[in-house]
Structure formats: C-alpha cells, structure tokens
Image (cartoon, rainbow, N blue to C red):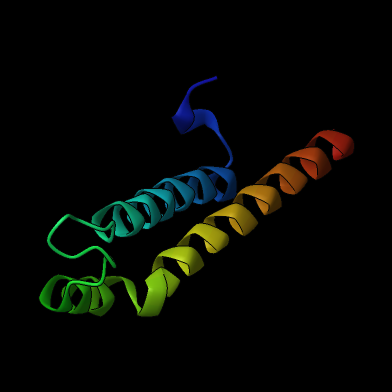
Length: 85
C-alpha cells in the first residue's frame, strides 16, 4: 500500500506528525548547551527559537500531538470502514 492509497485522515495525520516531530527535535537539538553558554539558553538564539516554536517548544509539541490524534482517528476510521464492508 502506497502513501497515496491511505485514507486522507490517516495520511494527513502522518504528515502533520512528521512535521511536528521534526520541529520538536529541531527545537531541542538547537537549544543544547555549548562550551561558551553552558546553560544552553543563549539569549539571541533562544529568543529566535521561541519566536518560531513557542515557549519551550510548545507549538512544536502541539503540532506533534495533533498529528498523533489525526493518525489515531485515521486508524479508527480504517477499522470502521472495514467493519462496514
């Protein structure tokens, strides 16, 4: 089964989940401590990250959660469609 043959809700959930997971990993990877800034909270870079990803990456977490919910809804829809057939 190819990605295009999946149910639209399930496919949308997987796509949003992948985008959210990439954003989440990016936020946490870019906010790591460096020898110059051992606490990991470099003022300019941290403010830039928070303007994109929200406070402590909350926007990225919400996108990931939305993708998870849509994926589960797509799985449930798939089960209901099979059950009706």
